Image (tube, rainbow, N blue to C red; front, side, top):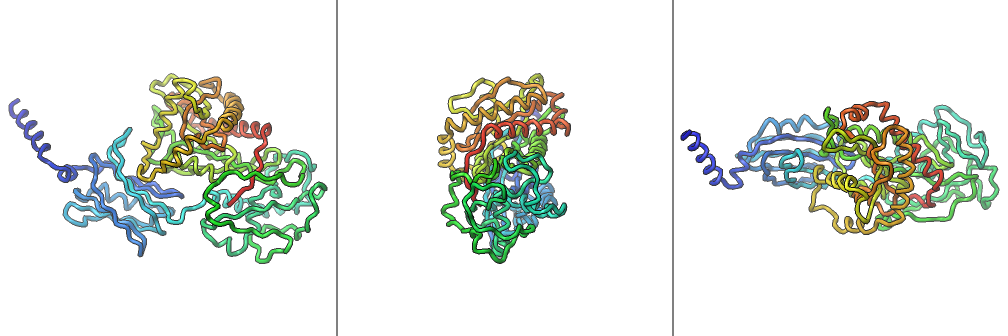
Length: 518
């Protein structure tokens, strides 16, 4: 017993005499992770004590060197080199070596110019100390690129069935478009934009600047209410690049970059009467909750929320992209389409950047006990939560930024306050309206946890100009419902229900007129 007390006293005295540098010497690397994503790539080094790091940014060739002080090269750090994927858009390779005595150097070779961020995260949830290196492209990509790329794929695939040009279309002019497999292209302004882009614009990068979209010519010969206009050339056969433009075809005019910052909806007069058809897209922003460093809730069988909600979100995306409502072509935009972390404020910004008509955030509920079950639908509240459970749920979801890891020095405090203050009564009323429809459709799939739309201060629902919903598909903490969440049949049923809710809402509530800008 005396020997044990002596060793305890010696150990305590030794710790008291150590300074921060010596404590770092004893730090152990717990895990290393690499999260590639279209928007940025994140490298995380988790340790049982805070690490001292000195970054060096080099441009020719582009690379980042990170000196980790007070540690020796460990096998765990060397694993980073093997985690680089060939399809990583930012990282070409990672090299790790002992640079000096008690200094490990981490060199990241980059594929393009990068704006790096290095910051520390304190222990939270299941994580210990984390050193984070975020690699943002110097030329940020426009989120509208995803919609354009999807449309290009449709145009490339359209000639395969070799359908006749527009005059051969069947169906009355004023009828609602039938659910045909091939979507009607005449009412899609995005397709018109792509078909008119000049050759030099088609080779540009995502930083095209802002392009104003002119109204497309009326393709319905039976409609006589539109004012006379010069007839366009014969229907082109999917030619995304035009080297010459007829004088009657309006040119695509670039807008100064300063006009591209605010992405508010710009109303305009409706296009000429086209028998119920529209000249604009209906964009549905689909937000798969959590991701990357933030796994979300974890079920008793180890199922992670971030995985199952991404699967459901992708199924909903595929259904939305095959759907039309009253002549409007629906397009889905994913705020997260892989296993990576997206801050809550960035999810809202992405939806506003594409001028979404509806924002749907997909989650899986959880509680301390396995008994609760059922689905729920939430909308934003400016005056407190409608129940204690709704407030608890909002607090849990709003903590995603702490778990996922946000660089507090780069947080836009002014923007955050603006989003908090701009949430309007109109947005909340629209959200409750679509929420009621969505709740009814989801109730056909399984049990509802609450019979009405709940409200609380969810940060991800704070887009001031977009009706926004958060859907808790079911309780992942319930063993039976965890098994259902993993079942592709249940995921399909849930995606079908969400689509029915979206269609039913827009059938009764046509969207506001607005001009899409790319």
